[in-house]
Image 1 (cartoon, rainbow, N blue to C red):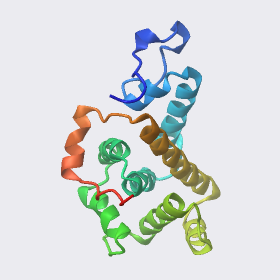
Image 2 (image 1 turned 90 degrees about the vertical axis):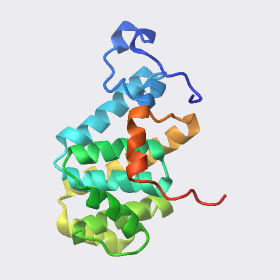
Image 3 (image 1 turned 45 degrees about the vertical axis):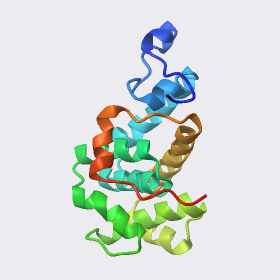
Image 4 (image 1 turned 180 degrees about the vertical axis):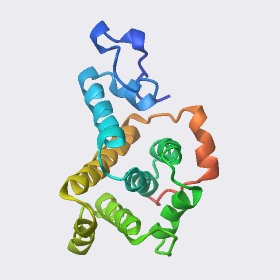
Length: 186
């Protein structure tokens, strides 16, 4: 059980019962701050359904955040999302290969997105060569959407860790199919 009770729709005031994505444990926990929960959910829905950034690149970046931070919740949830947007199992497995410095089947832009995401996640820096490679391929709008997605999900994995969000049982199958690497030694 997470550190905060997962709220149900009935626990919320009438004006907050329409918070998007209230089925997920993260939203149910963040719903203790209903206005914030709505904003977080809406930002996620913008990135997923309204942004012009390629769904493939977006999901690769989000999955890289989950993989790099060893966030089982983020990793499993976004494997489900990524597969629904057409990413292949090979695409998902490429994240581990690329993280280990091995080559994969990914095209150069996807590899650059993963490298940029790792750098921002692990070091809080985007080296100039990666920035230049992204700007050579993405419009400024898509670049900003990508960077906000990386930042947003880096923030969310930290909130999930602090609150100790439980992974819903229906997502465990993704951890079995696509295991995360062991945690870093403390």
